[in-house]
Amino acid sequence: MRLTAACVVLLLAAGACPAEARSVAPGENVQAAVEAAAPGEALELLPGVHRGPVRIDHPIILEGRQGAVLEGRGQGSVVTVLAAGAEVRGLTLRGSGSRLDTMDSAVYIEQSAENAVVENNRMEGSLFGVYVHGAPAALVRGNVIIGRQGGRMSEHGDGVSVWNAPGARVEHNDIRYGRDGIFVRVSRRNVFSANRLRDLRFGVHYMYTNDSEVSGNASFNNHAGYAIMYSQRLVVRGNLSEGDRDHGLLFNYANGSEITGNWVVGRPGWSRRDEDGAEDREHAALAAGEAGGPAPGKCVFIYNANRNRFTGNRFEGCGVGVHFTAGSEGNTITGNAFIGNRRQVKYVGTRFLDWSRDGRGNYWSDDPAFDLDRDGIADAAYRPNDLVDRVLWTAPRAKLLLNSPAVQVLRWAQSQFPAILPGGVVDSHPLVAPPPPPAAGSEWQP
Image (cartoon, rainbow, N blue to C red; front, side):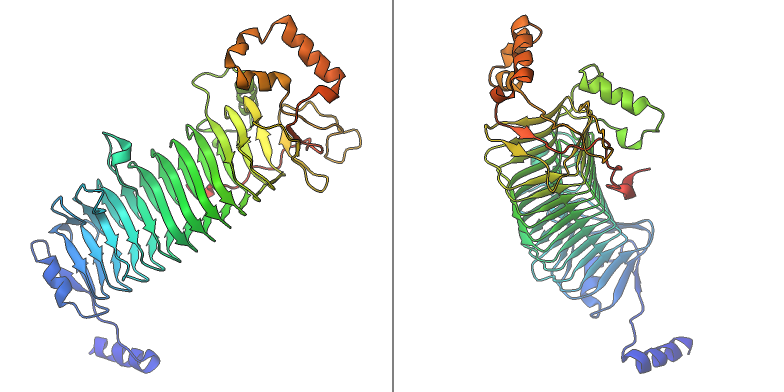
């Protein structure tokens, strides 16, 4: 009677009465229960191991009580979603197949499943975690995805793979192991936000995806944090890359984008140091080549990327702060902080590039600047590279002569006769103090 009365009130208010969740016990046929469920009905798997695979071809909610496991047979995908608006929630999923060509996944979302939701699941050891194959406006949120380990990383699947799914969102997931954390191809208007990405090849791998956003993610101990390729009009904002071995940010044929408020830290733990002077000592030791352990890679690599705006980012503790090469044109690089990198800039080119705009440049930790008028802008321009650097790039064996009298005379001559300096990067209005650290990836920092 109470349920009927509640339904009457809901019917009067909204014209519908929600279906009550139906329980499915371990040992029952989950696929049969799915097929028998009415559109909009919720099926709740009770604690225990349930046998898959499962195909959802009409809009229902498949959810699990705590301790509910849905296990595949080691072939194909554990759950395949074909219905628009279908939802998969609160389950532990494992036991997918191992074929890359059939995209075997914990949850595979087909093109017909517009607005499908995969939320708050735990996926263990599947080839792909979630594969969004053309489903517009799909939502993948709050999942823990633990990929495969061992063997060749290139033969593993991705945590979340998105193909041609306009408006799809991937948010608040914790992804570890496998190939790439999030891999997107040939898509548009996507949002990848507040994900944690660890122990992968690329944290986020972007290919041919336009008008999209990558924001508030945190990448730890990957080969590269964020690889943005062949894409246009992106917002890359507030992301953290800490301890990624080769690159924090990589831009290749990425154009017309806004890159702001990101924090790339070459050595693990620096973004969480106390302010007791230890951080400054480590920065100085790394810049002098004295810090222990292998040199980190490049904070950011810009290759043939045009008309981008880099502002308010912090690049620190890397072997190279920025490697800028291959005809990149029309980029604005201002208001950033370059701190404690062994080499702040590596620019392979002969043109002069001024990295300041409207009387404001960047902060450089190795710039012994004066600011006599106390306006926050150094009184002299900063130049990160000289003739000796160019010689070392073209002939690495010349490092043997780095402390020779000839090199010292060359550097003295450059200081006395600036006209012999090569083309390259110059900051005509460098900052004398670093901007405050960005709140990049703050959700994932302890």
